[in-house]
Image 1 (tube, one colour):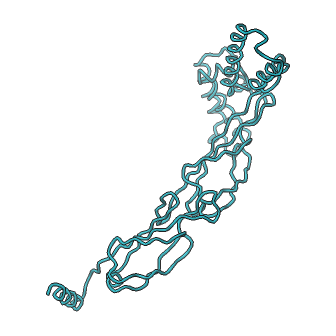
Image 2: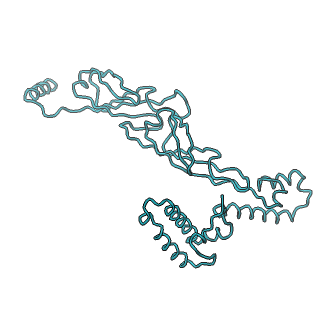
Image 3: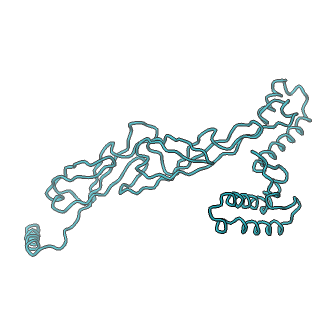
Length: 298
């Protein structure tokens, strides 16, 4: 990563006060604002640079890190952690004799700490792993019913993902080596993708089982018959037993949601019948229901 001189971007010296930083930012932000420079790519570029410089220099802790570590200021914690580990080792090593370490143990110790042998330590070429990136991917529930591919853009780079069927809301997957670049030849960080899955269907998802409420008219509930119901991948016909009660549940095995990373395995679909009482009865229908009620009570 090339060094960006944020002080130069704002036209300031390194010892500028907080008030001077604020004034310089406001002046340049007005000068290069997109509303005052429509369709001006150069002004847009400078406006972004001015905002970036202000975000770093107006933040007390970030400015301190930037002044100390320059282009690597975002990795300041890594540097300070390594320095602390080195100091702790030096203190503890003074209490040990050289017989405590074999030659290979000594080399391995520094290699595990700094990513290289003792020769790299002495040259100051300390390796640091790159930062991990975090991203969110929003999907509909139907998107994850089957395996599918999706292209995700992270920091200007397109990453093609194969998303397994049955991935869950809030689940996080790690893609190794797609995070920030390492320092001094260190390994890249990883990319962590969190799935945000919206359920815009009439099905309720419970782990890998699906639940659906189906309206059933009174006549079919009493006399029996057939009803066509929706499943996640089509329609099926179900037989209704005579005298089916309100709230009766039926299980359709294997008609639920796919089980994550178990190809061909699905949960179940549970149908709950909700009996609908007829309304707006005609005079004749009222008479018939009255007759029926008398038969039931006689």
